[in-house]
Image (cartoon, rainbow, N blue to C red; front, side, top):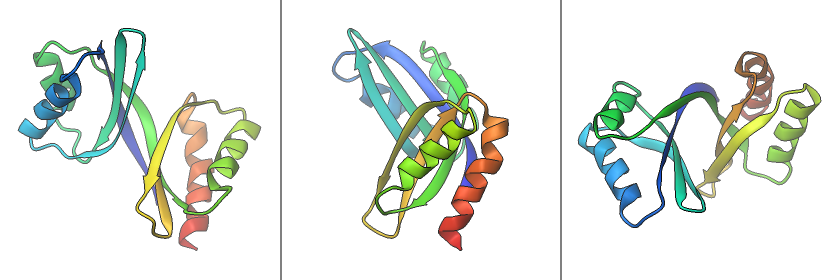
Length: 137
């Protein structure tokens, strides 16, 4: 499975309670977080996430004073076995596509859910689709 999504990135101060405030805004909209990543660089935290329903997400956060960046990304299911992420990364690299962000998880079943954003989404879409089709084959 391959789905094109929007990855939202929210830079903020790295302090206790910030993640709870941002996710609370999303919960207040009835918005389900489908995947997320947080990282800190010094005093700045970056919260990156995808959601099931993108309607009004950026506006809700901006209304509360947060800066929001929207980036095209893909949610891809890979086989949950060694070498799958490596193959995806290698294939994108061989096609001169740079991976900007990648994160994922599995619940221990046959597939892993991976979110990947790249510098050339148009070019990456067909390549990632072929990788995803191998999982469902």
